[in-house]
Amino acid sequence: MKKDLSIDIKSLYDMVDRSNRLFGEYTLYRFNQTKEEETTVTYSEYYHYVRKLTLAMRELGVKDQKVILTGETSVQWIATYMATVFAGGVIVPLDPGLLPDEMVNFINLAEAKAVVYSSSFENLFKEQEANLPTVEKFIMTNKSLFTLTPEDEYIDEKFISYRSLLTLGDKLYKEYNESTDENKFDFFDQDIEKLSVLLFTSGTTGTSKGVMLSQKNIVSVLKDIYPVFSPLTTDDLILSVLPPHHTYELATTQLAPLMFGATVAISDGLKYVVRNIKQFKPTIMTLVPLFASTFYKTILKNVDKQGKTKKLKTGIKLSKFLMAFGIDKRKKLFKDLHEVLGGRLRFLVVGGAALNPEIVTFFHNIGIQMSQGYGITECAPLISVVPLDKYNASSCGNPMNGVKVRIEKEREEDSYGEIVVTGDNVMLGYYNRPDLTAEVMTEDGWFRTGDYGYIGKGDYIYITGRKKNIIIASNGKNVFPEEIEEYIEQIPYVEEVVVVGRENDKTGDTVIAAVVVPNREECDEHGLHDDETIYEAINHAVHDMNQKLESFKHVSVVELRHEPFEKTPSRKIKRFLVK
Image (tube, one colour):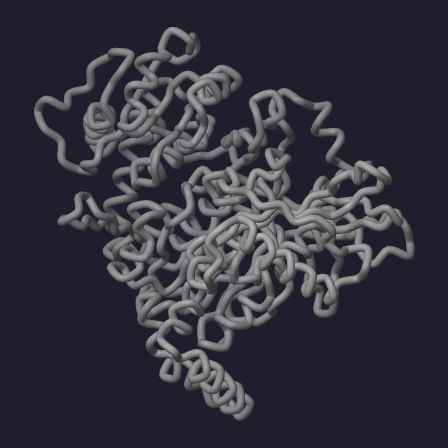
C-alpha cells in the first residue's frame, strides 16, 4: 500500500491537536533544566500546557493585539508563540541579539500590548518601561515548566511572572473543563487568513521590513513539507540549534517534527552543540551553511591529525563501488565519523544560503543524507527542498507541492533570472508599507524573491546568487560573489570570506576583492605566524583558484581582516556591514 503523504490540517491548532491524539505519550521535548538535570515533555503535556496558556493570554486581552516574544529557545518560547496565535493575537518574535535601542524601536513600531521575555532581559525592560508606552504587560519566563507554588498567584500588575500567567490559565482551564457552555471558551475556531505573525527582517529599524504572515501561510508550508520529511518517525530526534525567531528553524525544527511524533531536543547554546550532540544523539539536524561547513572542516582536520586521510579516501572509494551494486556499508565503514556526530545521525537539512556541493557529496559518501532547501521569510519561509530520501549535491530542491516557481530573465540569452514565486505560502504584505509590498509583487501577483537562479533537469532549482549582492564586472557581466566564496572557503587558511566589488583608483574599473578572516589555528600549524606570511599564502592560493574561473570572475585583491564578520543569530554574515 502506498504511504499517504498528505496531511489534513487547516490551522496550527489542528496540528497541535492532531499530534496530541496520535502521539500523546511520546516525548516531544528534551532539554537540560540544569547542568545535572534533564527534563522531558510529552506531546500530551505540551497540548494541555498550550491550551492553559491560550486561555490566560486571551484573558489578558491579546486578541488582535501584538505580543513581542524574545529570548533563548525554550518550551515556553514555542508555547507562547502558539498560545498567542490561538488566542487571536499577533505574535512578534524578535532577535534576542538586537541592541537595546533596536529592541525598543521595534516594540514601538509594532505598537505591542505585551512583551514576553526570558530572564536575561529583565533589567532591560525595567529600565525601558517608560520608553514603551503601548506595553501594558511585561511577562518574564521561568525555567521551571510545570511546578506551581502557592506564591505563584496571578496578580494584575504590569510586571508579572510566567508562572503567575500559568496559574491564571490553570484556573481558567478548570472552569473550561467544567463548563457546559460550548461557546464560553470558543478560541479553537481559527481565522487562518488574518495577520497572526509579524516578522521584522534584518537591518536597521529604518530599513527593516515587517513581514506579515497568516496561519494559512505557515500551515501551507507544513503541509507541503510533510511528504518531504516523510522518512521521519517517532524514533527520530531533531536537535534545535538555531534561534526560533528564524522562520527556517521554526518550520523545520519546531513545527514539522510534530507531524511525525519525533522528539525535539533543545541545545544549551552554540558553545555546547558538540556536547549536546553526544548527549541527545540526534537523527536529524537543521543547519545553516556555516555550521555545515564547520562540521565538514572539523571532521577532515581531525582525520588528517590522526593520519587517517588515506584510509578515509580508500573507504569512500570502496563504499562507492559497493553502492553501485546496491550494497550500503557506509555506517560500518565510517563508524568512527558517525560516533563523532552522536552515532545516529541520518539527515542534515541545510538552508539560508548556497552550500558548497563538495560538502553535500562528502556527507552522502559517509552515509549521512544532506538536503538543501531554499526559502525566504516572505514565503513563510520554504519554497523548495530536496526530499530527505533523495540526493542532489548542488540544487536546493524541487518547488514544494503548493508552490509555483518561474524564472524572469532580463535578457532572453541569459541562462538565469530572478526567481518569482506564487502559492499559499506568500506573505500578506509588509506591515504598514503597501508601497514596498507593491515593489516586490509582479503585475500578475507573484512574489519577487530578489534571488537569481535557474530551473534545471527534474524541475530542480539552482541558486546563482542574491540580486543585491551582484558585482557588475568591467566588461558588463554579472559576477555572483557567492560562487567565488565557495571556492575560497576551501582554502584551509581561510576561516571566513566575503567577496565584494572595489573601484580601481587608477582606472576606475570594478575589480573583485576577497575580504578574508584567516583561520589562525590552521595558519599556525603551517608555520604562518604573521600577517605578511599569511597574506602571501592566501593570495597564492587565491591565484591558483582563479585558474578554475572565467577571467572576469578572477579575484584581483585580497584583504585580511582581523575580526570575524558580524553575523545574524542564524549565523549569516551581515554583508552590508562589510566595507
